[in-house]
Amino acid sequence: MSLETLIQSIIHKSIRRPYAHIVDDKITIHASELTQCNRKLWYKHIVDIDVDADKHNVEVMSLGEYCHRLFIDWCKMSGIWAGDNIKVGDASLRIRGYIDVRVRINDELYPIEIKSVSEKKYKEYCKSECNVPEFIAQLNTYLVLGDYKAGFICLFNRNTAEWRLFYRERDNNLWSYIVDKIKVLHQCIESKTLPKRDNNTSMCKYCEYWNICWKSDKYVESKSVSKESSDSCDRTCENVQF
Ligand code: SF4
Image (cartoon, rainbow, N blue to C red):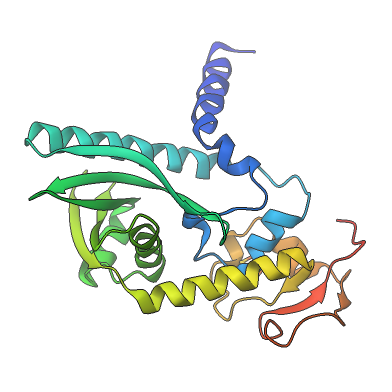
């Protein structure tokens, strides 16, 4: 093995380590997963297939970790208290997450969800005042689980190191929607019933389960789906070999 390959492999293993505990848990939903297609989450949590480890995604996550530390250092240099990575969750809903950073302003704690994005996305998101449903849903989940009134989304431009903060208050209606989604997903996981695809299929081309989702016809129609979940689940996967 060349020295370059060896160093690459050591770095790759080391940056995967902080996420091993998340990847290993097959039942609890992570807050950062919430806005993914329910079917993708179902595959992730129920189907034992060895999808590609996706080196690129892991490296992007690692870059995000670096942004957290950078942001905390900037706060400290400015005399603002900042702490990182606290765990929040709800055992009955089987959801948990890790707040990236918290800052204290006028004796109030605010969680910050840091998103490191490309310059193109940074400009697009800033133009919309960060009206990005998946970012808002994730922050809102932390606000509810950690019992905060408000927080910030921090957009970080990974090309230029520019950043902007967007203030968001807790939204209880949005939380109800998220809770419904979690319940349907858990019901589908427990009954091994395949959730329907989302209406928005724009993320399908990036999905590691695309081959199974769009090409496999090894499912059978479910006879046991409750009325409540029938809008979101459609077929069972009992005895299916992938
Ligand atoms: S291919 Fe698309 S619809 Fe299927 S699981 Fe992936 S994101 Fe969902």
